[in-house]
Amino acid sequence: MGNECQILAKQHPDTHFLFTDVDSLSITDKAAIDKLFAEYGFDYCINAAAYTAVDLAETEVDTAQLINATAVGYLAEACHQYNCRLIHISTDYVFDGMKEMGYDVDDATAPINVYGATKLDGEKLALSTHTETIVIRTSWVYSYYGKNFVKTMMKLMQERASINVVADQIGKPTYAADLASAIFQIVFSESAFVPGMFHYANQGVISWYDFAMAIKEIGGYNCEVNPIPSSAYPVPAKRPHYSILNTNKIEHTFNIVIPNWKDSLKNCMSLFQ
Image (cartoon, rainbow, N blue to C red; front, top):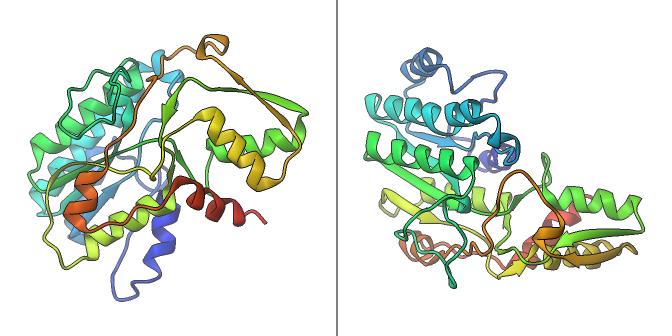
C-alpha cells in the first residue's frame, strides 16, 4: 500500500507527503510518533502498517497485538491530539466466514485466528480514540510490490509443472493500487470527510483457485493448477471460508467506482512484462 501511495503522491506536487517504514519509524514507539506529529502537523495519517503473517501470529501473539492494536491506539491518540484525520486499513479476517452472503460494515465480528482478533482490537482502538477516523476493511490484497499471492503464483507457475490451490475459500481480491486510489479520492475529494467503518475490495467473487487460474491465463503459463479443499492444506491459523465484503457504503459515500478484479489483475500483471 505504501508504495502505491507514493506513486499517486506524484500527481499532487503541491501537497507535502511524508512516507515512513519500519526502519524510519516504528509505530510501536509512542514517543517517536508524538515527536513526528508535533514536528509536522499532519492533516491526514494513512496507516497501512500491520503484522500480516497470519500463521506466525498464532504463536507470536504479543507481537501481533502490539503492531495491529496497541500501535494503532498510539497513532489514534496522536491524531486526536494534533487534529489529524486517520485512515486505518483493516481486514476481512475480523469475520468468521460463516455468513452466506456479503458482510456489511455493521455485521457482527467474530475472528477465528489471532491475526483477525488483533486487527479487530486495532479497529476498536482507532474508532474509540479519535472521532475523525475512517477504518477500511479490505481482503486478498496484492500488488506489484512486496510479497503476495499473485507474485507467488507467478513464480511457482514458472518453476513447477503443477501446483495445488485451495478452492473452498471464497473472497474478493483487492489490487493495492485501486485501494490507494480510493483513499486518495477520499482525501482530495471536495466531498465531506465521513468517519466510520467502510469496506473496499475489487468487484467480483472468486476462490483462491479461480484467482490462480486467472493468473495462469493472463500470464500464459503451462503449469497445471489443481483445486484442493482447505483440509488438504493444513495451516496453523484458520481462514474464513466465505468473507465477501459489501462495498456499497464506500461507493455511495465517496462516489468511488471500484474496478472488476480481473481487469485490475491484468493491470498489475502487465507491470511485470
